[in-house]
Length: 461
Ligand SMILES: Nc1ncnc2c1ncn2[C@@H]1O[C@H](COP(=O)(O)OP(=O)(O)OP(=O)(O)O)[C@@H](O)[C@H]1O
Ligand SMILES: [Mg+2]
Image (cartoon, rainbow, N blue to C red):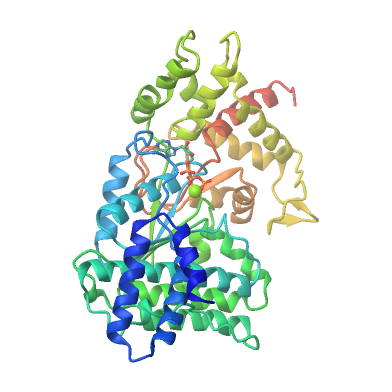
């Protein structure tokens, strides 16, 4: 690589921080190195090529569109100001976990200039330990860039930490086993990471891995189990042991926390559940963020009714917006809540389940390729759920009644959603904090269950 090529690369970047950091890297290198100018430029070029990967936090929702979840923001922001820990943020599908975390992290990285790395595993293609290591190498290198930037701004002493000079963290030697490559990456990172005391006050870095349950793909690789064990141990070492950085893992997978527990035990991470909005907040969201769009889209239509929308979408912001979208697309504006698209989809899923059709979906809870529950068991579970005043069932109670493998199979097939606790979820009535609970997969699924049970009673199915 030549200097001029890197200069071209640099010119393509529009971020002024890029130039500042790059200049600082060059300056600090001049100061601290006894290398000649050629070597100096070579390292600087490596630095610059790494800079292409440097990321800023892109929140998916613009500031003025984001519906403020004050309680959740307060709780998570406070947690991130405390000593680094490993946190799992889970919750039902589309409950707003990613939007919430990215809003918080964007504010933190912009206002407090903390080094934040966001890795969305939904957007990364990897299915081997080797490709995972390469992907992590790029991301971690960009994080190191942020460290250098913060160090520059806070005028922190960087001697002793290689993070402003080393371009690649992964050993590229072709004869290395994939497991050694990923272990070397963790080791290289550990050597470069400054201790907790280095960061002023609450500035410690944050690593946010979203869709973290996708890491399970690695188990198909023969080195996958070892790589995951090492990674989780590395997380524990750098969070609760050395307090070097926060790790936040996001997932809507019901079993994710149980899976992580197998690697590191349950005391080494804290679980946060982000639920849908409670009714009063959902109504405010509807009034302030949803029906206000009518003026721009179909000003001639009356606003759709909140009670109808809430009855099939619950406090799920994503679904409330979808409901509104379906309403405004009706030419005559005549839209019945029974027509909401997800009700049909959820009903089909339940009917398939009633006829024990696995649809070939991979599950560990099958017998001859079919789900293990009986029709009677499924009907019983649906009845108990829809007749519960609270809208949820206690996991351990249901296991006693129909057996754990049946309950787990229903979760596995996305007919029920498991919440490990009620920490930070406000959409369900108060309950015993330490007990795991089961809800329908979505509020629409709950409505579909009610309708299906009626049809079964009337022998229509
Ligand atoms: N605070 C919010 N303000 C406005 N809209 C929101 C908010 N949170 C979520 N939404 C809406 O819900 C959609 C889904 O949110 P998001 O992707 O954050 O959910 P998620 O829980 O991460 O989903 P998944 O389970 O797929 O990971 C967003 O695209 C947005 O339309
Ligand atoms: Mg998400």
